[in-house]
Structure formats: structure tokens, C-alpha cells
Length: 64
Image: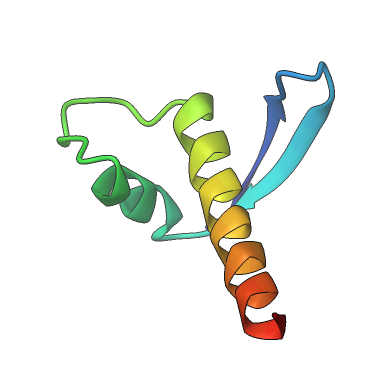
């Protein structure tokens, strides 16, 4: 089952994210959160930011 979340960004804009099964578990593992700790919007935002930044950095390094 998927869920749509609207995450407020530091710029004041809103990020719309469709959460698919397994995504929250990946975020939880990435940040080392135990099952008793919640995954909040900031965790999701930082995970997505890191993933995109890493992909862009890798692409830029390949083209140099």
C-alpha cells in the first residue's frame, strides 16, 4: 500500500512524496533508527536529498 506525504521544506515550499512499501524501512536503516523510534518528515527529506545529491555528484565526476 502506498501513501502520499507532503513535507514542508526549509525554503517554505512543499515536497510531495509517494511512500511505497519498504521505503520507511530503508530510511530507518540508513539513519540507524530502532523500531521504537519514529521516522519523521525530516528523516525522509534528508534521505531523499542525500540520494539525489549523491547521484548528481557521481554523474558530475564521471563527466569530468
